[in-house]
Every structure is written in C-alpha cells, then in structure tokens.
Image (cartoon, rainbow, N blue to C red; front, side, top):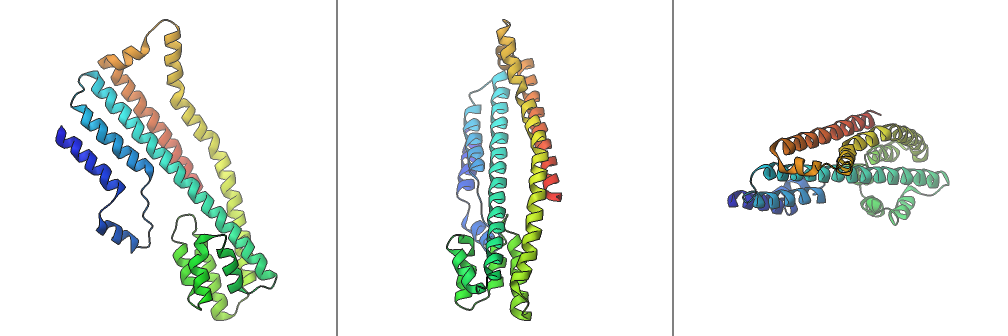
Length: 263
C-alpha cells in the first residue's frame, strides 16, 4: 500500500510539473499547455486517500473511496466551468477588438496604427502589432493568436487582413461584415446559455436533494448518517447514490455543452 501511495504522490508531482519533453512537444505543437488547479487538487486528494487506505477497513473503506470520487468529480466540474468562463471572456474580448478595429478603420485610421493602439489594451494583439510595426507578416501573427481556445475568430480576421494586403480589398468593409456575423453568433450563444441554465440548475438541485432528506430523517429522530456510513448496506447505497448523482450532472452538462457547440 505504501508503493501505491508513492505512485499517487508521483502522479500529483507530474501533473503539477510535467516532464521537459512533454512541454517541448506541446509548445511546438501550437497548443498551449494548461494544467488546471482542479487536476492538481484531484491528484493530491487521490494521493492522500491512497496513503490512508491501508489503515481503513470495513465499510469506511467504501466511504473513503466515495468521498474521494465525489471530490475528484467536483474538482473536474469546477475546472471545466472555469475553463468555459475563460473561453467566454476571450470571445467577448475578440468581439470588442473587432468592433473597435472596424470603427477606427471606417474613421480613416491606418490599419497598422489602429492595431498598435489596440495592442496597448489587449495583450493578445501584441505579436501582431509588433509584426505590423516591423513590416512583418501580420496575418501569420493573428493566426498564431487564434490557436488559443476562445479566440478562433482571429483566424477570420487574419484571412480578411491577408486579402486586403494582397488584393487591395477594403479591410474596413470586410471587418464590418465579420463584426455583424460575430454579433449574431454571440446573440445565439447567449440565448442557448439562457436556455440551458435552468436544466443545469435542476440537475444540480436534484443531486443535493438527498442531503435535505438526511436532515429530515435526523429531525424525525432517526440516525441516517450512522446507517449510511457505518454499515455495508448503507455505504453501498451511499456510493451508488453519489455515483448516480455525479452521472446525472455529467449527463446534463454534456447535453448542454453539445447544444452550445452546435449553436
């Protein structure tokens, strides 16, 4: 059991600081390396639970496994929620940049000067602004910035910029049409999120309702907590209930996420 606990600790360390070759492979593959705190927390919880499992016997072993499983699931859900929130903020930033860029170009400002001014407020435009100042490949810099999740619209900006450079097409008109399309997509996204919100809230509410039942049972003079944590039948029912609750939440989240992706 000590060996298993050591393996859990090693897993936690690798999640926090991966091997050098892994970092090099991902950094050269145009995909950012993101190790969420939820992964690190889950690995640490698993390591601690494995180290303590050798001293736990009987129903409490299943209870400990259930607690660890619920903790890992909650950490993963929290990490996913934070990642989705970051992606929404990035999409909002790109939409704002697109609107400002189109407005300033329609006002008669040069594209290079406009891009340099916006880079002071939006860091992800820094490489493109430096490329514009030095006469470099601005579309390539924009395409590189579009590889980050939530900033995919920059790929379309890069295409419009490239067409304007090579064919002399008016960049302001192209960005204006792209701004209208992005605004429509954001409206649809907000409507889908508003529609999926009640379903998500209902799933989470149904998952925590058994806790209310425990409180009612204790108030009526029973001791459901002792039954669920101290007997084989109780911990088995508790583990099955927690597994079904987690499965229900994951199912609702997957359906909602699929709806958002197809919108």
